[in-house]
Image 1 (spheres, helix red, strand yellow):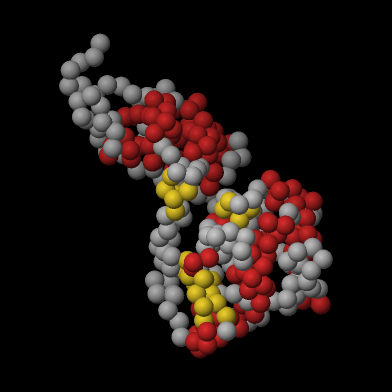
Image 2 (cartoon, one colour; image 1 turned 120 degrees about the vertical axis):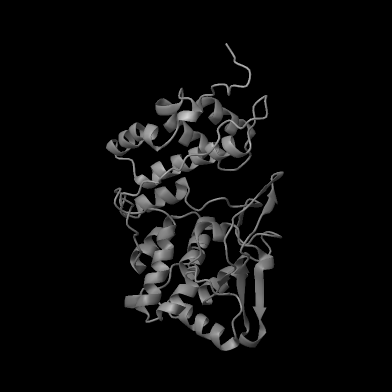
Length: 322
């Protein structure tokens, strides 16, 4: 029986279904997987009763199964989004929100994340040689600039800025960027603009990529590449004999750590490394004098030479990077 004026009971499963039906985003399949993990524990539960207390059986069961806290946090982040929509956007027939206030959800952190695995020169050459060409070029650019995975995937030609006095160019990635793609507005968001400084290897890659796509630097079959961490990446990582146990990170972020470690080994000062690694500093990091840019370029040039006389991995098979 429905009592007039009373908020009807709605299960979390109903809320999850509504979210999946009404949301348009490229990562919706991943969100659906997260909700599938939650469903056995709270699917039939009244959404009004979902909070940290009722979520503990889910968290404890996932932890006991060896699931990393970061993975559990990803599930909870999707849940938090649904609860926020239920409180702020969704309305019932009486124009009342599905819930009054979204509960606070604490993201678990058991310090169980995989350790980064910076590559040495031999490992880099072995691994990169096993990657398909389009991923190898992106990986080589990433390990020479420190850009994050999506920073490389979204890199646009119109973000390139010529620096005539130094006879070079840099890229400035905007702090907030939203793109229209496949009929949907989507994109990556950063709070600050970021400067991408190019050494001789990165410059060579930019020149090599010219003319392949009118907008994006790293296309594949006429489209922007959505991710570097693909099945091809994972297969190459394994075949190269790199760590595959759960204690080590196996993704592209290792190339950022590789970049940072090589800068440190080359004696690049901490503040310069922070700029090149795109760490948030609160400063306006895109307005540099010629002398400052010269210092940044010299820093990234310092990691172009491999140790022990081992050559840099190749831009294309059979062609040395110049």
